[in-house]
Length: 400
Ligand SMILES: Cc1cc2nc3c(=O)[nH]c(=O)nc-3n(C[C@H](O)[C@H](O)[C@H](O)COP(=O)(O)OP(=O)(O)OC[C@H]3O[C@@H](n4cnc5c(N)ncnc54)[C@H](O)[C@@H]3O)c2cc1C
Image 1 (cartoon, protein in one colour):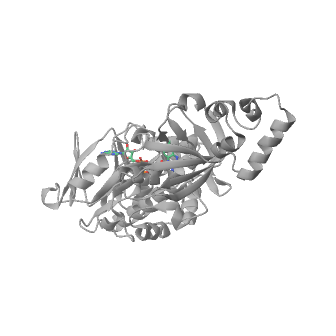
Image 2: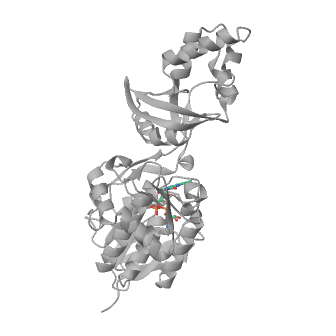
Image 3: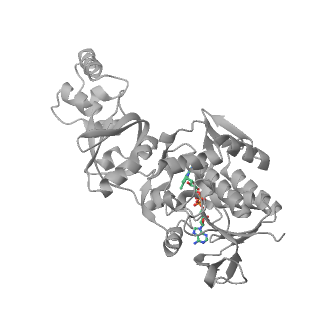
């Protein structure tokens, strides 16, 4: 029987696992990647250590306009199957409180082993090939259903997997061209917005607190409601706030701002104290050292740069307590896509079958990874989506 020709657009996380799965299922596979090498974004993941996945898999860890479709896809190639796959290709996964990394703690191991396995399976990897168009049936060449058009060549294919990723990050190649290809093919693209991104605040004091890291609790308030609460290490910057708790609620903030709603982050800089406990503590410190100014009273309790922002002249201790426990920061925007780790939005999951990742409108076309309307919180969830959707698309495209 003649082998199926599968062409994969994008040699990132989803594209490389798709290539391996398609080749294992006896297809002739070509990966077209416009960067000079595969997996450039992968190399930057987890601060260069690659947080591969997470053992806690719950619906609430992911977002999409169609969460049930997303969840079905994750069941098709589960967390456990993902770990097994990586063990097979040579990764020794280790858990840090349920967050999985390669034992080498090097994202480069993941990129290298994916490419090694693909090459062993005779996958053709063509770098510096920017795909600008995908022609379907009537226009196709050599009797194949698809023709994948780059600047220099046309690749015939029986099945195509679009795995172009999103426009998030400053890493080369994240140009959002996958959205253009999807739109050219008539697919619905939900407006992409940045997610897992720092937030810009309104105020003239940011240079004072810039560079401070502090454990805190943040409540995102909009429409007179607390919409999300996160806790962890905050990074106070010269434009506003960053850090994992900020990332976790940044997607919601981006959506609210996009829909013209106001967004306030209420920051609790000392979440271990109740208001009463904190006021009593400040009072006690004042009694112990009556010679200290209010600013001096805070030394040893809060970072110096933060004290400069929080304490103003002739302030009552009750007022200071209120400010420490409930500091209102008006959010005016997110940092741009280049500072985001992922995009929310993308090709609507309505366009695909959750069992196969095949496009309902265009048989033989498959989609995978962040190009789709699926994103996760920090902690290995975005890669898990890439592995699950990519593995499924690769296997099914070979069998098509
Ligand atoms: C700094 C950073 C850290 C992160 N850390 C983590 C983490 O630790 N854990 C986690 O789960 N997630 C993490 N993520 C998110 C994760 O990296 C992505 O969700 C994941 O890489 C998406 O995989 P993908 O294959 O869909 O897209 P990508 O990995 O972006 O791959 C898409 C590929 O397609 C290529 N391409 C695009 N358009 C074309 C075209 N027209 N022609 C040819 N090639 C094209 C691109 O060059 C790219 O190589 C991080 C992201 C960033 C930016």
